[in-house]
Amino acid sequence: MRGIFLLIVLTLVYPGAVAAQNYPIKPIRIVTTEAGSGTDFGARMVAQCISGPLGQQVVVENRGGVMPNEVVAKALPDGYTIVHNGSALWLLPFVQSDLGWNPQRDFVAISMTDQSPNVFLVQPSFPAKTVQELITLVKSRPGEYNYARAAPAGPTHFSAELFNVMAGLKIVPIPFKGGGPAVIGLLSNQAHMMFAPAAVAMPHVNSGKLRGLAVTTAQPSALFPQLPTMSASGVPGYEYVAMFGEFAPAGTPRPIVERLSMEIQRCMQRPDVKEKFLAAGVESVGTTADQFSAIVKGEMSKWGKLIKDTGIRAD
Image 1 (cartoon, rainbow, N blue to C red):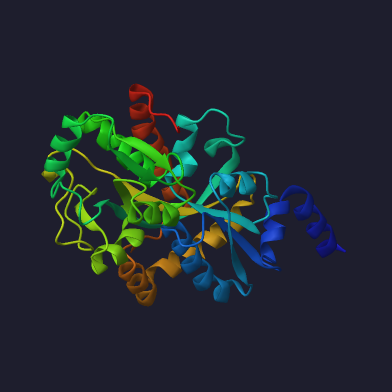
Image 2 (cartoon, rainbow, N blue to C red):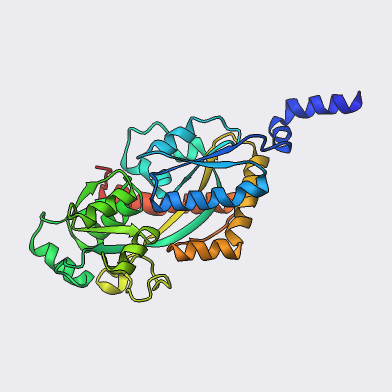
């Protein structure tokens, strides 16, 4: 009787803790961006890696635009629906006011999973061979050049707008439905240039179909040792690192969040996983939920102020 009484008390007072004891008992869904994007790659790596330790199938569901965030913000906070996304989740509200979700109100951080530089890409035939040459060319013909971007406030968008601001340019965005379609747009002459996540850029740079001008990190990247940084190429102080990770709906029991975070951290430290990420142009990074939450808050403070000061909008 005493055991039953304690179980009832725990269920009433700590329902999340009781639920977490048996978690998971069914498949887990990771919602992410379009198939073929760099974000999709990260989500699938996480899904494959944690399904074994969790003892349940982890499936990836691809959605376009802002839908991954909207789907998970409205999902039950039970740990069975999470989102894998990057800065579009925490910076988009600064540039678009009609969203049905808020990063601080509707999500809880689980773990940062990976990060990478973006790569400034043009076609091999593009007349400018360096970033400084491109700046000179664009300034001589204002309004004539555009760039391909994927989700608003995502890496492809924000990197380019930061470039516009810091270089004093007005390169026009051409929106596409994802990172993959944006690269296809660049390859097919629908756009003149693009800041692409390294995972998306690497095969096209290696094959010679696209030419990389620079990387967006403050220091040279081992992923693209042949490329200079944007800062060293005529835009002093330029830095943008694309970060990605998992989030759960707000209200998800802390024990479940910690269980997922622990398995993701273990996953990101596996040598084979690190090698696969590096081969795709991404660095694996496992963090605790609290560490990732602090990183996101720092990013929102840093870039949110710049967005407000410069008036960058989603469209």
